[in-house]
Length: 257
Length: 257
DNA sequence: CGACTAGTTGAGGCCAGTCAATGTTGGTGG
DNA sequence: CCACCAACATTGACTGGCCTCAACTAGTCG
Image (cartoon, rainbow over all chains, first blue to last red; front, side, top):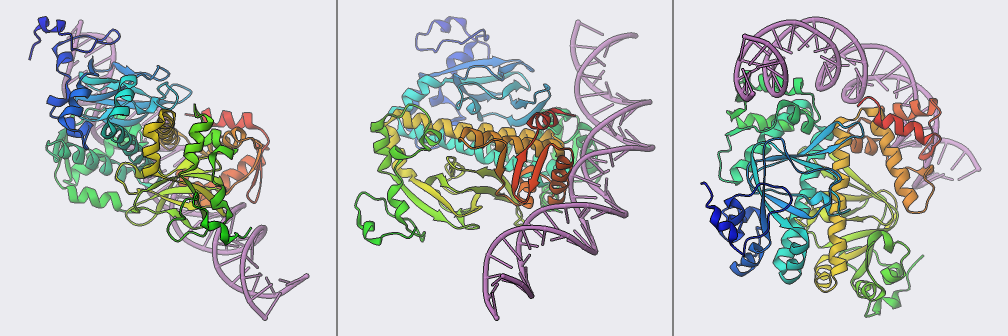
């Protein structure tokens, strides 16, 4: 698990960027050997395409609480989560933040900066986190030669849009309890797709962050967790969540709308 | 207003699609002569690029209340609003709809279908509306040869994402009055950018639709319009809105967050 | 151990939802 | 042109869900 520093001389390795810490992981950010590549680049890339992508993928690490990118910063790369998790958030004028997303292993983020070349949101590591860095300029050049990559990029962008629209549906028309239920089920489904348990996982966001994401106050989130626990639908111990009755959660999502 | 059917034989004209009505406008959907092209395709396209785009742009018309596309339908085109306006909405399981966007002249819509090849939202004409139809397959092929078009497409997708994130901020953290104020200012700004008055415009959505968009009930929207009117900040007569004191609206947006 | 952060729970208030009655507008056909 | 109808908007009274404020607990890290 610990790096062999001599490998840093490897000429094929992409440059570490900015002031980020460097480790052996920088040298292993190769999509062709990555177990998560089906998540990042799901469609139609053959081994040859992947080998080309390898040449442009770097790596970066962030400790808990550190920003991967911040509002207003120049957009120059997309990021894929390799280890850990992050939240994204936008800022109101008064500095308060609205959490807009939770990103786990295999998720790609950074798309928000493509329109204006500056990020309009920020991404903060929720735990110690490694990301693959794909310099956008190089990605763009490569995509011109690899149509499957081009098409994947578009799909990822569009997926982001449909995801945002579901959140709008949640924020605009669901009651607090339904929002919490939908949140728990969404996480379950995303863990399931990644091969983890869909009935037992660890929350990485604080109650306040979950509240911000769901348009609720932290006290409300806490109360609803307690309520769901009393009803035997979930078990919450600290940040460990167990979904005891996913069916009941699904009913809550639909109820009373 | 009624077409000269003989011109339908024009070989250069794109095929009308599906059961849409056909008119002379089908033959005039050429970007190179369109006053709105800076909105649709804002960056770096020269006359030659535009001429190529012309070859793939068709046209479609919808009467008030008709769907341009519906949830679940196959995604095969992007649309640019030439005349009129539309709302987009996603559906909850029970059939109720959450309005996710309001689209006016020069806006491009349809991006939500790119991820899965099926639309996850629907687009409904709010008045009699003409749109340019850009078949996605052909757009994609052309984009491979015209990097500026590729780049514009990405920017438009990304812009959609940042737009959705502002809506999430609005829904997640603003009070009802602030939501209404932000809504009115957003429309003002968008009309301004299109060369229309930013202090006087016509609302095309009903109170219920505005409420759905803002996560409020129609009664609440109505009450707040009345309140703003009593305070001398706006004047609302039917669907005609006049912003008498935009500064006060801006203050309301920021207040109490 | 003390300071700090995060979570839990209660009491009370207020904002927005709900229900209901009435007014207004716009389209249609006699 | 006007009568009619349906859709939309307005306003009031009341309710209730979520927020606010606050006190307390548990866990963490120097």
